[in-house]
Image (cartoon, rainbow, N blue to C red):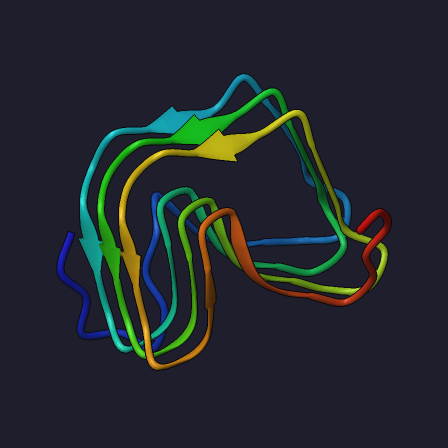
Length: 103
């Protein structure tokens, strides 16, 4: 995918009530902001047992699995194996999270 809209992923934006399980993507994704292999922007939804394997290239809020996960969001038992390239707020599984637990 190569986006000209502000964010890009297989699931560009999901709402607070959304629950995704066993979702996956193998597609490469390129877009400037909120770029991810599976979910570009999540407003407190739940994503579980999912993965992404495609390369992800972006600038801001770029993640292998999720670009940005808002407060109250849950990402559980998920992974990303594709390469991730960004310039600000980027990471392998996720770029930014409203709340985190663990190390």
